[in-house]
Image 1 (cartoon, rainbow, N blue to C red):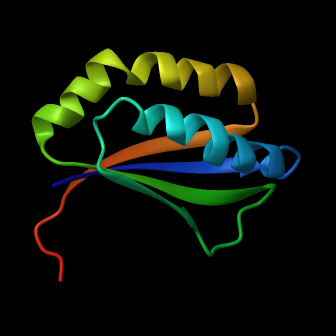
Image 2 (image 1 turned 90 degrees about the vertical axis):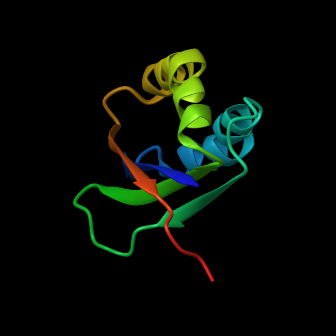
Length: 102
């Protein structure tokens, strides 16, 4: 299983709107691609100057499915996020392979 993690620091001035948009619009759009089995939104428990930080986690069954997401869907979804919250967030992405769960 592949864990695609997007870490986002969102400005406090748009935080509440962003979180609602993520839950009601963006994440459902990502999940509608059929590339992920589940997702999680995790608040990072650290003080960030001027913002709040989150780890948005998406679980793909395999690398091929993740690559399909990146090539066919991610560019448009990322542009939509950037247009809506331009200058109000910072983000970086991490790709992990799940090697064990219990």
